[in-house]
Length: 173
Image 1: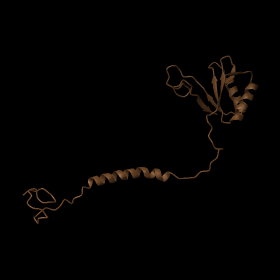
Image 2 (image 1 turned 90 degrees about the horizontal axis):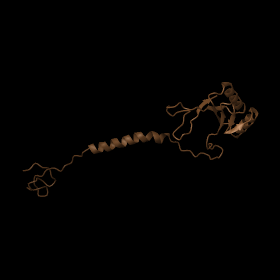
Image 3 (image 1 turned 135 degrees about the vertical axis):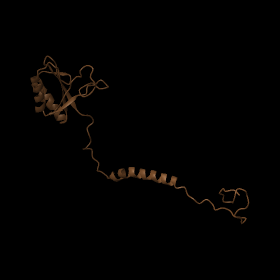
Image 4 (image 1 turned 45 degrees about the vertical axis):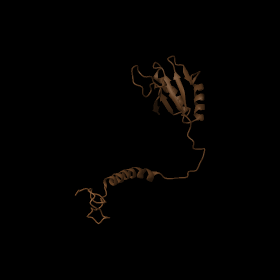
């Protein structure tokens, strides 16, 4: 007599349940390992997603055109060459009065306009401070100093980026 399990009886064919023989009981054990694996995966999924669902609050906010963010930050470039000549956005400025008028006009367009100050390293400190004062009196208090990187330095603040444009170094006043 064989010892295999079968719902029809033994493997030797010596009768089964239908024939009234001494057949063996059917396999009734359930393998719970795959069930536990699936439950653990579901538990992990719920643990991860539950905080995301709880923190989202559904609101129907009112719509308005007044709160739209500006397209790009505005700035003007104020340059001083080694001879003391002043340029505003690549245009030479004759005197401090004209500079004050043009900077006030820029401030009236946008109070968040930034002045990017580019001064030759031979320009006296007093001239740079004078230009900063004119910009501040015009209503432009955000002043950034544009510098050049020393040769062999890594790109960063105040240095050319991958596109070749300088990244201005910002100093808030």
